Every structure is written in structure tokens, then in C-alpha cells.
Amino acid sequence: MSAAWTLEAVKALRGKALVLDEAFLDVAPGEVLGVVGPNGAGKTSLLRAGLGLMPLETGRALLAGRPVGGLNPVERARLVGYLPQERRLAWNLPALDVAALGAPDLPPGEALAVARDRLERVGVPDLAGRGVLDMSGGERARVLLARLLTTRAPLLVADEPVAGLDPDAQLLTLDLLRAEAAAGAAVVVTLHDLGLAARSCDRVLVLDHGRVAAEGAPIEALSPEILAKVFKLDGALIETPAGLVVAARRTLSR
Amino acid sequence: MSGRRLELLLLLALIAGAVIAIGLGESPLSAAQYHQALTDPGSAPGEVLWSIRLPRVLMAALIGAGLGLAGAAMQGLLRNPLAEPGVLGVSATAGLGASLAIAGGLAAMPGAIELAALVGALLAGAAVVGLAARFREPEVLILFGVALSAFAGALTALVFNLSPSPVATAEVLAWLMGSVENRDFTDILRALPPMAIGVGLCLYSAKGLRMLTLGEEAAQMSGLPMARLRVAAVAGSALLAGASVAAAGVIGFVGLAAPHLVRAAVRDDPGKILRPSALAGALLLVVADLAARVIPTEQELKLGVVTALFGAPVFALLAWRAARSWRA
Image (cartoon, rainbow over all chains, first blue to last red):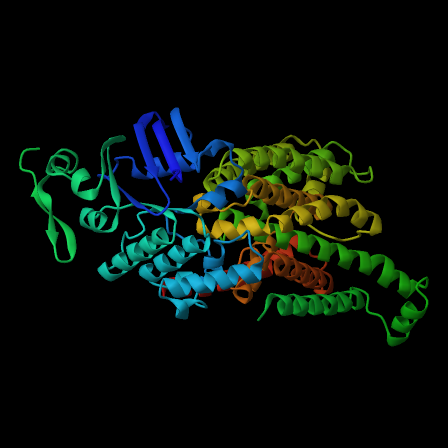
């Protein structure tokens, strides 16, 4: 199957610092790719570079096989929905209106209908009329997830969608994204929780100082060597009845 | 309240306000004189109502609508409830243009001050539009606007400083305080084209302003032509602010306060707030100008002085209430 999103040998600068160095990524419809790495490894930069939000020094970024720089805003939005890490909302719009912002391509009535359905899917249909600034951070995160799902895009890119959420909401978020993948979407998420990444993602891509340190099935990509080298952790992924978990402690030799 | 009902309500209030503003004035009329004015527009009372007060009220409504709309568009674009039409620095450069024209002795030429102010606004507007096209971050526009305002303010002060005649200085000062006194239909027709374009551009940007609720990057990826919508909002606001200053001098607070008066009724929606803000701005300025005329003072009060005098405390009250809701 052809890739929904491909980055090849991407180098990118932020200011004068090299934040991506020969980085790559590919994701196909139907799979969930987790991007992990320590703070400052370049996770957000990788997403932004691949979405055309940041210029590439070298390399290519393709959405459904087409260079992202050559797409107009409408074409790009038809191919990908993006949930940025930044969750600050400027105005206290009702949740339903915020979710409906995911579908500016539809007539307002239809956009609201899709938004209502997605709010239901993320489990907060009763919040539809509530102002988004009058909510808890977790409720707002769900509304923004509903906004992402309202885009109906074949590729969903979510930057730290579970940051600051309680355990149940974290699992729900990834379950919902998995369901989108099962329905045929390609999904890319950045995560800090390695256990969650191992359990929820079909493949994991490990970034370290802007380079791809490992990429593959979770159990392979998050090997003890990678945990030690990239995350400075002494431990391993272990199989439990609830799925993979990371059992590790900080390495003593740093 | 639905947006449509709010707009209808504001429109009715504006019409009522305009009728009262045309009816009342410095020189009180008797019932017979009102009758005469209505039946014979060419009579002396008719002249007062239809040739002096009507254009003045229309001008106040036009300027108020422009400032209210520009303020709402700026607040949406910069995602900041404290933004107002002057935040881009365009009002200050328009004021500078007018000051130069007055100090240069062009005040007697019809339309010269207006033209100079508009040129000042357009030059600054072009710079700000160029900036808005290059940078997504609202901070860039705000900082540049502050710098531009300060620089234009300094140059205006320099005009005072170097002005050889105190008469010209007084004239500049009076003009800067803002007024719609003695405006006629020619003045309105002169202000109309740039304002109409400004209104069109701001209303066009509405869907982009709504999308910006999500932040710059999510808006960028939304499928809307954000670069174009951002430029439309900036250019539209600059035209409205510039044309307002050109037509009536510097009138503060209306652009800042009008959106806040209707914000709750449209549930904070930065797109739906545009038209009600224009109507609220028009209403505010018609009422403020009426107050300027009927408050008995030796010299007629300047409109800019009235809006600031009444606007500032009311605005402080609104801000106080809003701050309490933020803290909760």
C-alpha cells in the first residue's frame, strides 16, 4: 500500500541549530506510528517539517506521494489533519463550534453535524454547548481531539495528544486514534510515555538529537540498547497481561 | 440570543438613536418648527435638521461602525481582547499626515487634511500588511505597531515643536481630538470608498479569524487560505482606522469597547462578532456625538474627548467584570 506520509533524509534548522539530521518517517493507511524521544529530540520539528510548517534544508516531505510544498492549503487539509501540542484557545467558543472548525470545507450545518458526532465519539456530547475556556484541561483536550477527527483526513497527526491527561483519558485518546487507523486512516502521534507507545502503536520511531535512532515494531525499536543510549534508562519492555510496559530505572553511569 | 436577533436589535437601537440625535441639538426647536422641517426641508429648521444634523449623525455612525469593525477584526486577528484599531500604528500615522497638512497651511484646501491623513494611514498600512504577509505571530504586528505609533507620535510632537504659529498648533490639537462637527454629505462621500473596501476586507476575513481561535499552526493547516485572510484583516482594519482618522480625527475607545459590548451575546465568536461590533460602534458614536452637542459647555465638547471620558470608566467596569470571570 502506498504511504500516506513520507519524509526522506530531512535536515532542518531552527535558528542556527540543526534540529533534524537525515531524519525519515513513513506511515501507511491503517497503521499507528508513535514518535518518541527525549525532550529536544526533534519530535515536533519532525512533524512540522513534514507538514510544510517549517522549511527543509535538504530532503523531501511527501503527502500521499506529493511534495508538501507544492500543495495548496485546501489540498493539504484534505490529506492531513493536525493537532498541535499548543492547546491554548483564544476565545471561549462553545465546544461544538470549536470541533466544527475541523470542517471548514463543509457547509456550516453539515460541519456541526459531523462535529456533534465526533464529540460523541470522544465521550463528551454533553459538553457541546459549554465554552471551551470554562472546561478542565482534560475536557478541552477531548474537544480538540474531536476537532481533529472532524477533519475526516486520511492522515491524522497529533503532537503529544495525551500530555496532561489522566490515565483513562490517555488510553481513550489512543483507542480512538487506533479506531481511526482501523477504519483506514494513517495515524502519527508523538508520545513521552514509552509503555503507552509500545502498547498502542504498530510501529515506533525513536528520535535522538534529530536523528532516527531506531524504527520498527515497539519491542524491537525500544530495545534495551536504545533505552540505554537514547533515554539513559536501564531496563526493558516486558510483556504483561495488560500489554507491554517499560520496566526501567535511570542508568547510573551518565 | 442568536446573532441575527442581536444585529436586528442593535440596528433598531441605532435607528432610534439616530432619530433622536437628529431631533435634538444645541438649538432647541419648537413643535411647529419640527413640523416645518418635516414638511418643508428647505426652511430654516429643515436646514438645521437635514443639512447640519443629518450628515453629522450619518458621519458619526459611519466612523463608529468603521472603528467598531476594525477593533473586532484586530482583536480576532491578534487573539487579544485589548487590541483596537490603532494597535497597528495606522491611526498615529494618519494623525501625523493630518498634522503635517495643517501645519503646512493646507487646512483651507478642501479635502487636503483628509487626503494627507489617508496617505499617512496607507503608507503605514502597506508596511503592516507586508509584515502580516511574512510573519504569522501576532506579537510581531503588535510590537511593530507600538513602534510605529511611538515614532509617528514623536513626529507629530515635532510638528508642534517646530510650528512657527501657535494658531496652527491649536488647530492641529483641535483636529487630533476628533470631531464630526460641520461635516456635510461631500465629506461622507469622500470617506465612503476606503471605508467600504475596509468593511469588505474585514468581513471577508471572518472565517479566518474564527479559525485563529485554534492558534496559528492549526489554522495554517485548516485548509483556509490563512495568508490571504490575515492580509485582508490587516488591510481592512488599516483602511477603516485610517479613513476614520482622516474623516474625524482621533477617536479612541469605540474600537476597543464596541466588540466587548457584544462579545457575550455572540459567545466570543471572533467571526460572528464583526457585524454586531460595527453596529454597536455606530450606536456608541451617535450617542457620544449627541452628548457632545447637548451637554451645555462654553465650547462644544470634542467627540474624542467624550468617548474617552465616558468610554474609559465603562470599559474599566467591563474589564473588571471580565477579569472576575477569568479568575473563577
